[in-house]
Length: 276
Image (tube, rainbow, N blue to C red; front, side, top):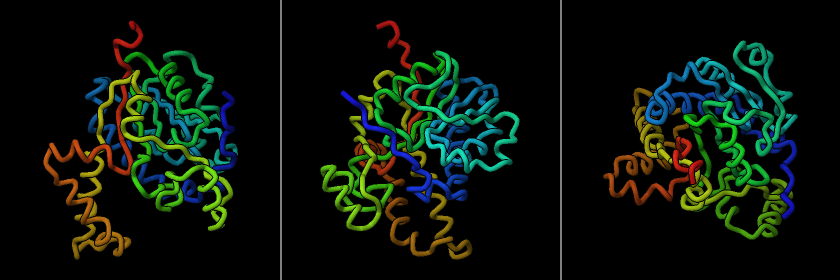
């Protein structure tokens, strides 16, 4: 079956990708999660590891993670995004960038300790080939930080339109065109269960709840009159629900996990996969 082509010039199509403040917040989230949980899947210090940042875009997250790792390699298919890498990022000694296809990486087998795959799987022509390629280049004791959207969540995360990702392709394209938001809906997301099947070669450590709790704690601080929120309208509309969900007991947490808008997992190679 012929694969669909890559979505060209995504950097220009999605202005949020070029928002440095947003990218730095995501980098801080990733670094914080790795500091708290990486030891659960690999006891080696992160500072001794080589990291591959897939879908690095303009390199903001890649550079922000440079103090965490020995080396960081940023790869993206979008040449427009790569042209926006700041000169100070390109000058960081332990960071390198390359244009490449995430489904056909020019890296040797078992050559990478850590892969950052954040908001990438829904953008590639084949997420099955993406996962196979990550498995190939990852060292036997390596792991992936995976973050990606949930198809069950009713609000589409790239256009913030309800049910867009549930529609037949032609209907989704027509809706975007009607709103003058583009002429083609490209992204393809999966459910919690489908993602588990996609990553069946890996052992999943789900840290999504930890992310939810961290968000809730920050929103609690922002709701404090002594520390006003940057966007005061956001806290009463969304923050109260997130804080309530974050306080749910363990059995309720397990029921809610498949319904979260976004998943955050650490994926380590299954020891029994190569032997099977």
